[in-house]
Image (cartoon, rainbow, N blue to C red; front, side, top):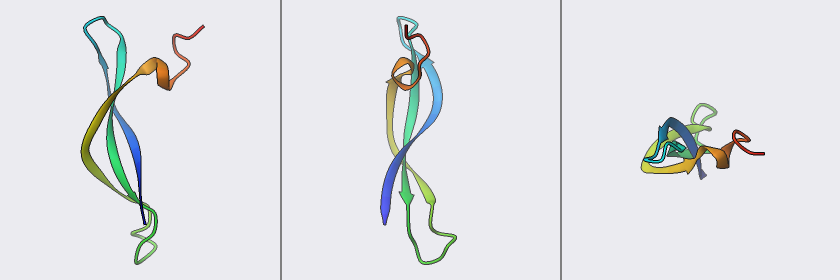
Length: 61
C-alpha cells in the first residue's frame, strides 16, 4: 500500500521578505513484503512552497 506525505526541506524568503517553507513530496509505503519495507519512503520530484505562517503559529495574533 502507498500513501504520500510532505517533508520540509528549507525556508526561503520571497521578494517581499515573507518566509515560505520549501517542501518535497514523499511516497510512503505503508505495507510491504517484510517488516523492514513497511514505512519505506521514496522522494518524489514534486515540490511546493507553503507560507510559514500557514504551518505555524509564528506571526499570528
